Length: 296
Image (cartoon, rainbow, N blue to C red; front, top):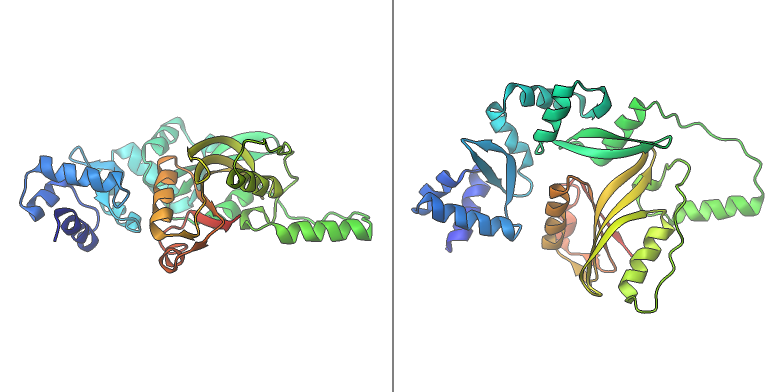
């Protein structure tokens, strides 16, 4: 068995580990163990924690996030207070926290994810417990903001009703189903030199009232990164979006996107004209609870 495969087996059996533990398992020094761990992290086969034990981060497999709670005792008192608050409440409104807690929430990046929420033209930050599903987080934020779903009585022509019904049925992202008044989105005008894949992605965004904040073409006609705003019942939520022009999206593709989303502290949206592999389908909802896949 190759050294890196052995390391993965050790992490799978023990959960989050330190370089010193790996050095003993592979019969090498800490420097060499750290090098192997760095390579596995760079290839997205392992993840690295923000929390440190004895000055060293922990290395773990995707899906082992809950095991990081074993090491909460290594936090300072302020971070522990913030950890307990976010763990109990699942959602914290940044503006309602005392300054010490607000700073601590920004330090415990493994356990507190920031959500940028726009409501009544005001932007603010909410903190989400890292294991809380996005749908539950949205509902909790909605309750905190006291957003009530009340039917609006309007006299609408039959033709208008049909158009509205068709528009709702076409929207594929659950976060958009109960949206508030949609934000005005600039009409997308394709350029002659743009590739067809980018045009398809931008048409998908326009169709679903998704606003593009930034974009980066990783590989022309094949791979594009976006930061987008998706309307939801609690306002606009930021997502990291990975668009891949592939016939089959693998579990590795999803894991790579998930890791990048975690580094940006954002939920992830993966777009592709292709289908998910069987293993990738198993991962969604079980291990990758902050990731959504949609076809374009």
